Length: 489
Length: 118
Image (cartoon, rainbow over all chains, first blue to last red; front, side, top):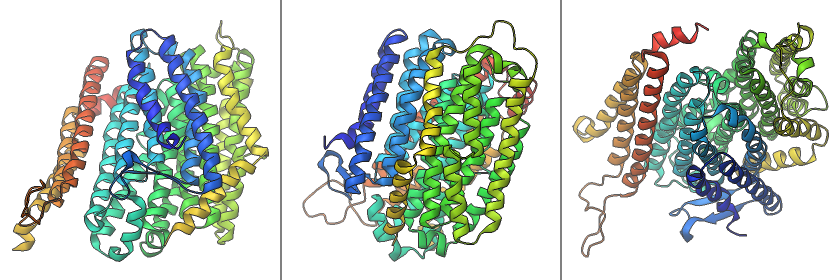
């Protein structure tokens, strides 16, 4: 059991090549789904353990830190890991039906292998306590994402994937430069060790440059406005299951990485106090919330609309973390979890639509309220959560975000959050109106099969369950925020 | 002297980095973009390897009588990064091939126009 911390990453990593070798469609899918459930079980156990112990450490190969690679799990990383586990365990069963239609038969094994690699890469970023190891896992997850996006049915998936490849590699290489400069100054790559040695050399131009490279690189991965241009097409034209998985996890893991670098490695006093980075992030977050929401209103494709909404929602998270308070960080972590649940549900609902219609153009959704009642009900429920209606998770995190802003007397931020939510009402309503109040659906359009509806509704119900019973999520997020702020020198 | 000759490697890092970035931004041909990306990454490899250099030091192989060794860690790290770079380039080129099959062009402007036609 002591090895669980590393096994949660190693199991999907080892299962991936096995998946690629397995023949047919059913067998690789079964293996991938089983692995995703094992990951969920392991990450849940680890989260429970972290709740008791605070921090878990594991030395890879028995090499002591800072020489060896250390795996380090605290409340924040356990929370993100659990989130990846939940989303993967829901999306992989969904992929069984949707990928059977969208992916060529001879590519099925490779498809599930890439999905598992993506999950392993994301888990690795959260599991490790080594700054260079993060780069390796970042590239594992990114490379598999480029591949998965390119498997989309629309040819625009190819250009989207290429654009993401260029931008994503640029971001990861910026991160690599930042880590290299920090290593040059401190001689260590271990995050905890870096945090100890940095203050002595913090006031040098090399470290300032390193911070700039690290933050810009990670913000490219987060798709923080105005570095978001790769995201909309990538999410919109990827295969349905892939779109849901990356929309729910990829940018969230990047946000987690930013929190980790700013709060654990650099220390919040240095990064936000001395370098005044918070005002830059704050301004970009607010701009992103408003512009991306406004652009989402006029998107002709429903999934592209949701992707723009993701850019806006990432703004909420960055807004929370740049407030540099326990309340702000709690809100950021809460929204990180909650947004994954709602966007996951919405993208899965659109996946059901794409399964029957072959696409998600908003004008094609007419009449679906009658033809696909369960699917559209899931979309409406997810949309309510996105807007932030009480009793949904969206309300919980926005509430905490508003409280955190008010704590510092930042009234304009509250107005920005409300304005962005109103724009969310506009773009969700546009889809609802066409689906429920416009002409009949195309002939022969039926409700999606239950194998797609079940995973979708599991996430939808999670939106309401965790919106009412907030003990687990708020508890974990608060614990993580306190540990992160307390750990800062 | 030290500023120009002593830091020669680092000047080259900056020059290569800028050439790579400029190529990626200014060129519309997708393969040229990949070449730019490769030059950019090579600059970072050079940055890391230069960091490991220690003046008057022996290669990092244990030998009696030698006290000063170069730092082997940056080279090892960059070995990993090179592998990642090769994988990225391979995937990028494969994508360019698929784009060429699907669109009949690999010029960014035309791709943009074709994408917005639907």
